[in-house]
Image (spheres, rainbow, N blue to C red):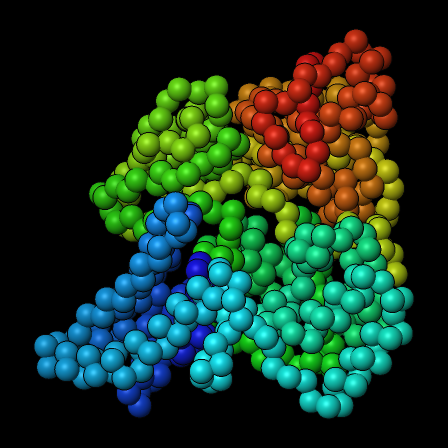
Length: 545
């Protein structure tokens, strides 16, 4: 239901989002809808939602008979299932337009919204699409039937691959999966859906790309919302603006270069049009979001499991605040205020808190976002795939970018500081590292030996920061005037930040028992304790230095 992009497509909302920029160079959050023979421009507010209970979106029209449209969906769980309450509120620009809008709502909008809701229910009930009206599309597919020549090419290329269960699943996926799922095939998500080993799925996709069945795409994810915003140009192309988060991106975010696959256009050309800019389904790590006017407040409380969350705003004011949720805590309420920055910077709560209040003391509206600090990785980073499948170098765009990469085993350290300024100060203190790199308020450091990393971590004031250290394979890639670290070791350290709390250094538990980190701890007479916060998929420990 939160995949409002697909929902709007079935409901024939007709929203289009042309890429436009304001005089300041930032992308405009708005679109165009064709209604009653007119092309009407609108401005779209950020979604308000509390996962998994409800969402609301408001669109303000610049002209036409309607002044604004508000769509609200409320999901209520009960013993017999879930009730979906979907409401459309349309405000006429004046009373004279009310009859026109009512006629349009009854003749077209109501029919297609009902069809979209019926499609949602069919997916949830796992029932086949209705055959009463073949013109009504299904949210879950299938894709359009392939032309004869394209279908023959698909079968020929599939037959060239080793005949394994993964190849069989790939064939079925390319024949019938919705186009929206095929346009950006994420190996991690498909491996989970197919109950197949990840290395087999990636190996199959790489071989399929070598034979022309699939194409490889490298996407730059916004580090805030994790939504792909561009295919990067490693030769110094222009920076891109994330219209949802209001920040500029560039291709030097090592944790944000993601590898996806898509059908070769010769096999299946895809025709997927964006129908919703800020769909909550595209940002599953965000659990609550709300637009708050100046002087107003909002309650962001929703179902929170144990773990570390962060509270941030758009636009940003100072460092993000942390919310530690633990079964060991007793407090059920928290109050924040946005002044020159978010205060307080840290609160401790029990799971499923009663209230998380935020008062906006700024003079302009802001968007408040509560999200998991380190979300579950749903994509494979470019560095990781290149280490494990080096043949990919010959397949990706701008292959020359990878020619200078240095690959080796190293100690990777990731640190989340409370602010960009604090991260810059900390970077100077990591003197034993062979390479340090700053990405917003996160520092990534590469050490040649665990003993050197422990030397730095032992003498640095670690309070108020999240820390993680792992041993793994690392790439060092020259990019312009700087060198960017990436690879499995960097990914693993970044993900492991989710098992840290302020002041603690999270490490894989197995690393404290063996390997270079374990030996370095033993030589110092130091050890570790099991971490009180989990960071799947591996158990973690906290170092005692």
